[in-house]
Length: 305
Image 1: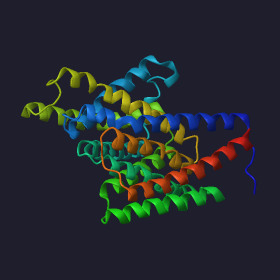
Image 2: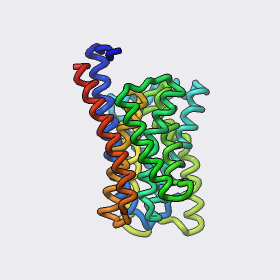
Image 3: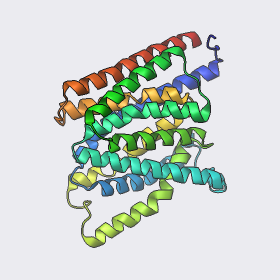
Image 4: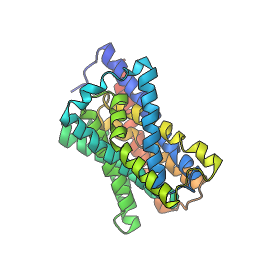
């Protein structure tokens, strides 16, 4: 059955969703460069700074940028226990995802992290099918099969259960599903998320300061870079949340291949991590899947005009 032709408003929303989601994944793909630059700071402290500076940055956006809708709508969120519970869960998912990713960069295991974000679209497709009833077109099914083969080969090549990739894929896949279903806009939702976990981050930093183990304050360059964690955290998450609410979860899932592909290039050509022929075969299959899915997206976009 041919795809229905959507009205202009729906087409514009779809295109904006693609642009926002694509931008988010490019930023995430380059994030290892930032984490390596602040690598002298322990991963827990980096994540705590991400949470606190994100709250401040988002509060500024809500207070001074009219397009965000301002602070007035926040009261309605706090009066919805189910929505608050959802945002608390998404906050924990993003916080744990950040921690494992930052640790993997610090430990020189960016390729494993990249594999996790390659697996993640398969998780998103599965969740979209099981939880949202989304259907895949024939080329999409072919792309899923090719990508699954590439991931399966990589898992077999490792010879053990890869906990880093599986955790990153599962946590972010669930985050995408929950944010897609949460009735809250991108900026306010992210602000409430980070506000929920900010007390935990502040408590951690205070404890570290009392122990004399705080990395902040030891190096002027690091001190200047750490506040950027809030901007680099908030902007791509806002873009992702904006795009996820306007796109099928399967489309969001396959666009996510862009971030780990950039991670891979950074790991090999900037950080010098080894990349052998077995890995090349796995990633080659995944890139082929992405090409197939991209062709399908272009055909759909042409039909939508």
